[in-house]
Length: 126
Image (tube, rainbow, N blue to C red; front, side, top):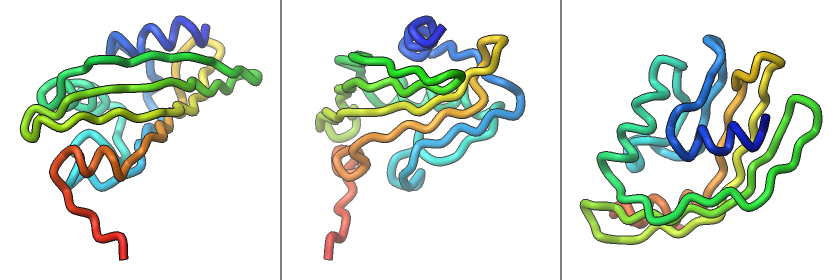
């Protein structure tokens, strides 16, 4: 089931519970596809990423499963259209899938500083 979910994530067609918790840490004012989303906003995540970036790579290298929980570990490489900069980040997606195969929790962790920088932000690291 986790491998099927990995394919769905790549295709942008994730089966999600109506009360799912979906979050990618970061500032949505800088990176429009990050932050917490209601289930009704999840399609916007995929649409916004598609509008603002060109995906060169989204590769799930390993899936670790523990009961209904799974962590997908991989790498993503995208080019931000507005800046021409490349996002090349390792990532981990922490999910919980219910017995019906629907995601009830989705947390994605990535190099948020690299992503924000590629979007043109100049983070203050002091």
